[in-house]
Image 1 (cartoon, rainbow, N blue to C red):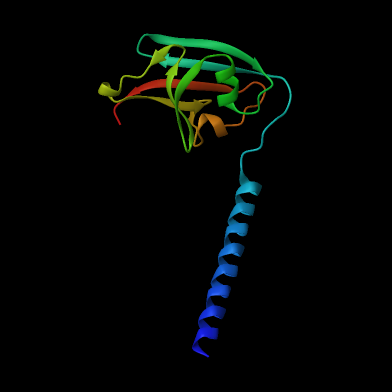
Image 2 (image 1 turned 180 degrees about the horizontal axis):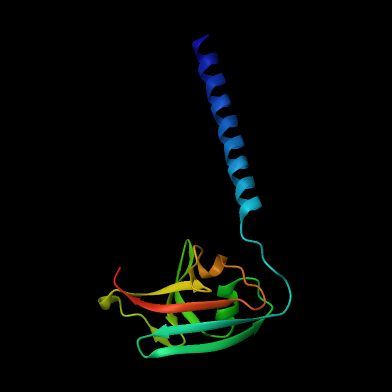
Length: 133
């Protein structure tokens, strides 16, 4: 009798886990940033101590990383979270100085990585070379 109870409890736990994973996956799919198909033009500004550089990028990509990679404007290290940007417009961060690129859109910090940041026609993004972690 005890073996049947353990088996039944295990089956119930597995079913609950599968349902939980399905619910979390569904919530993510419903709330993920929406993309826009088709041609679009975005502005990308690079802000350093030496000044601000602006570039217009015309693309049919739906995500920022894809658009900037295809133009050869960014590079970095791939990770499980997507591209960790280390180089923007041939300016590479200096790890010894604790430098990193801060990505903003219209002056507000972007909470997604470049590979998951959707773009729309007319968007303006800024990459600011930042020192200190």
